[in-house]
Length: 112
Image (tube, rainbow, N blue to C red):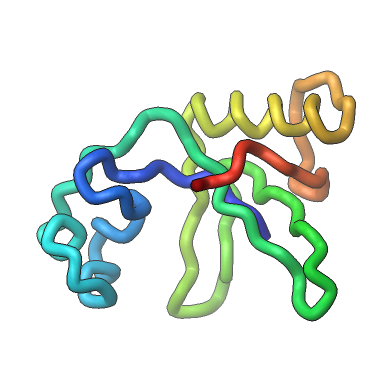
């Protein structure tokens, strides 16, 4: 499912890559050192279903992903991510903001 991420202003990788346990998966010195300088504005990391290529809905900020696995993470729940999530709902679904169920589709600005 698509997710909002904060990129590092030093290396451009996701902030999560700088967190414990993730540094070993990349040769990036910044990520391996765990010295992230996160961009406060979230960016959409879109995903598509396979084999149909249909854009997947956006995870709600603060949601648990891959629960029960060694890859379990929690999506960022900062105010900026919540605001971006609400804006996406309004832009794509015509929703009026407020509490947003994670079942809503999202098509935020794509990471580029």
